[in-house]
Every structure is written in structure tokens, then in C-alpha cells.
Image (cartoon, rainbow, N blue to C red; front, side):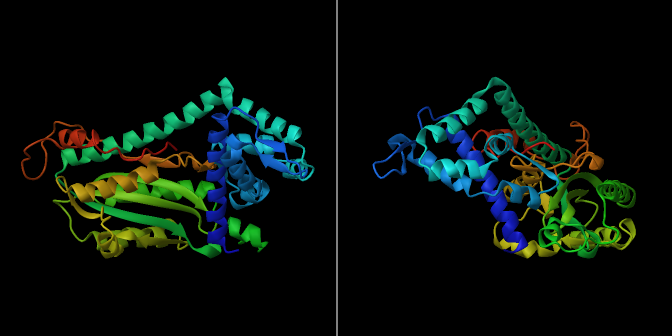
Length: 354
């Protein structure tokens, strides 16, 4: 199985287990009974739950941990892992057609998921999602309230494969690089890159960044950088210069990057262009921009990177104060007013806190 497939399959499995846990909480009866042929059979009102449960049992929980060694998972998944980690025991109950035993296991899991302490944990997890998503949305709208035209840059900052210790290497039992990039170095590189764009680009008015850890890429960062669109053009060239500085100077030639602004044509054909020049009244571009920013802001509801030496894994600039003189053409109504009206009819999916 290829690395990308392993990561995708494990992510899908985590989501399926989340779905099962939510279904289980709202289910009140037993799961199975013993049929006349001495095999288990789902009860009439439990067929969907039983089918989902059998799918979840195919997940190798230990393998998921190998694929995501530096992550934590959603509360639902971690509760399932804690209570259902002995997969062989569960499969033995199914093989022996032990309906009472299997129903008891599932009922115990249901009680744990309905417990007050666990429900508080879920509420906290979901509040974090809403909080960070709303914060990013307000931040972008405040930038457009202050600047009528922004030059938006997207960069993915990564490391060359020979300098990273990846889950892919662990899965394939390959030897680790002699001096891999550490989480502490990633945090230092993030801070150095932020200092560089602050000092080197006077037109900088805002930014959003997110650190992630992939099976194949290991540590990498997504950046959305906002420049005053009345002061600069050539966003593709600027993005390339930023990326080159990252690759050569900040990471001491261990880095690499992906210039998303060099691919504007692809995004435009898909109707998802939210980079380059974005004007305050361009609803399509602003909607595409917010969609990407909200994705970065999410707390990784299902699978979240954990590395204490990184510090924060998500950040953004400080919103400009509304009421200062705006740059650009006069507007017939405020942008915040415009988006408040739109929000009553279309709510962008919430995202999560780091």
C-alpha cells in the first residue's frame, strides 16, 4: 500500500469510527441476537449500526498509531480505541456467536460515551472548532474593511525528504536520516520566516499559518499572506522570493516550498480562485479565500498534531482597527455589513482551534 493511500485510509477509518460512536449514542437497544443457524444477526432496528460497527472492526488501531505517531485523535475515536482496543476479543465474541457478550461490550461503550464527563469533553472540542473558525472569518473581513484591495499569497513550506524522519520511513523500516529536522527547529524556522516577511515586505498587512505533519512530508506549513494590493503587484514573483528565502536561508538549504500563486490558472478554472489580487467587492474570490482559511483554522477535529516543542500549531496576525482611513475607492456600504447579510443565508463550515 502506498504512503498516500495509507494516510487516506487511516483518516477515513478515524472518521468512520467517529460516525459509529455518534450513531451509538443515539441508539438504545441491543445490537445483535443469535440466529437459528447459530450465527449473529443484527436486530431489525440495529442493522445500520451493526454494519458500521463491522466496518470499524476492520480498522487496525495499532497501525493507525504508526501512520500518525505525533498526533492525537478526536475524543470519540480515542474512547473507542480505549474500550475496543482488544480487537481479537471482539472478533472472538462474533465467531462464537456470543450475542449477550457482544451486546454487553457495546452497551458499556455507549454508557461511557453518554457520561457527563465525556460529553463535556466533546463540547469543549466542538467549541474550539467554532471559536477558531469564527476568529479567522472576522480577521479576513477586518482586513477588507481596512484595505479595499489585497494581494493574497499562499505558500506551502516544506523540507527536503532526505532531512525528515517520516512515518513512511517507520512503516517501511527505512533508516532515519542522520540529522532530521526536529519539532524545535520547525518552530524556530516558523518564527524566522515570520520575522523575515515582517521586515522585508513593508506592504505586509496580515497572515495566517498552520503547521501540519504528514506521513510522507513530515512537518510542513501552510501560509496565507496578505499584502496591501495598492502597493504591490506580481504576487507570483513575491511568493517565489519568499519561498526561496525559506529554502536557502531560513532552513540552511534543507527546505523546499510550493508556490500556490504559480497555479492560479488551475484554481480559476475550478472557480476556487482566492489568491492574487482580491478586491473587497469580489464575492467569489473572497468566498474561496475564506474557505481555504477556515480549513487551515480547524483544529484537525479528527486527527490533530501534538508536539509540545512546536508551541502553537496555528496562528494569525492582529486584526486592524476598524475606523482608520480605508485605502482604495469609497464604498457604498461596509464590507462587514455586506457579509453579515450574506451570513444569514450561507454559513461556511466551521473550523477548529489549534
